[in-house]
Length: 245
Image 1: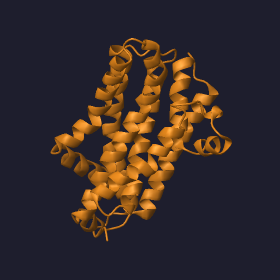
Image 2: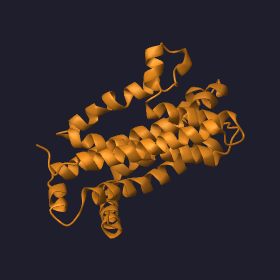
Image 3: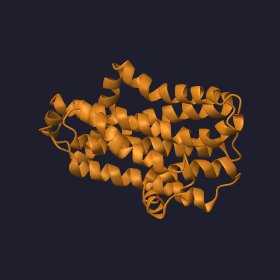
Image 4: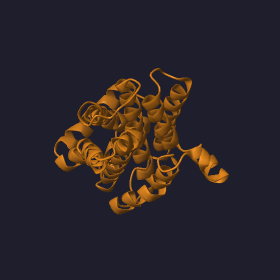
């Protein structure tokens, strides 16, 4: 992997996104709007917002980054941009790393905005450090970016890319422990939830919510989410195709 080519790819993606205000709004503003709406839906029961707000602080960035990244990457393939880039001395790893870096920078901004809004404006009550919340939110956003890059290789159109969301995101959403504790699920569902990265994202957020210090469980959860993001990026580089058939 060449650092100069990776940085050049990231700079090109950021220049393109600068001219796409709708995608920027989706990435930066939608998670904040959802958290704001959630806070006032539970205005009469602030404890409910404290219980689920931290979990959703990780889930919302993952979902939005997944959608934007998968569609943006597919658009490059269907327009022929990807084929032209790979005809140059640009490796697949350079391309994937450049995309991950560009969207990762946006993920930092997105996670910072959402975490700051939840903790300092909406009054999310956390026992641990808000910086740990930010760390997990950022890892979740990077995981969403990696998943979006990966599934874009298997979609033939933007509509198909959106259809991957029920297949990739919704099962994780149902089994991550947001709606019911994972240890109260049927054994088969609990076993499945134990291999899904979103489960560890939610667990990591809950560790920060309840514990004032960094716990071994929090370290484990953060490492699992980060490791899954790296693994999926590697799979994305391996499955990257020049064009959509």
